Length: 232
Image (cartoon, rainbow, N blue to C red):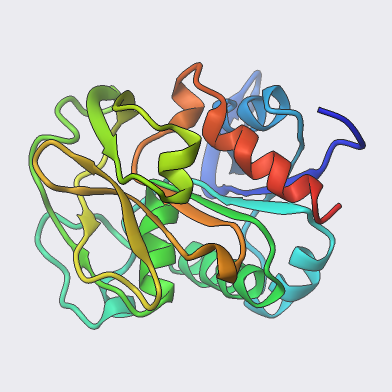
């Protein structure tokens, strides 16, 4: 890799209470795997805690690439559904902020990677819907499982990772109806859509249902960083 390290923004949690040392305070949190993955792939990581949605375009304008991180379930109102009993409580501030970031990134053709919840919110932002509960992809609370995903040939993801790969996973929701322009680019053995993307004519836009920050395979993040390098 050559040239300056592109600046990659990563969305974060805003939690009412976290502990460190003698402190217990409201905190902006991000599992360390996310910035480490950006750094290992050649980028600079910037945390983006929830902010007013009206600030999203100005935020995106200062970035070379964007990651929408995993996290809580997207509130079903965003895709016209009533909440299932198994759907988690909403984080409305994060939904609004991250959706605004996605829309601003798409408008600016900023390289964009959605991870787990981030892929689901990308789908919703483009008018798609979600299955609110599936079995077999989140077996033990707080523990990542693994399963294989098979790429769709001649897609962005398929060219980045051309072979079937075992990936770290923890999700109980999945893509149902695809959003405008999105195409599936990987599937699990049970048929679950595990990656989605926009055609290359729409820029570099990819969503993966698994958690690359919990593994050693840098290829997906490296592809984002290289796309971001082209905008830097």
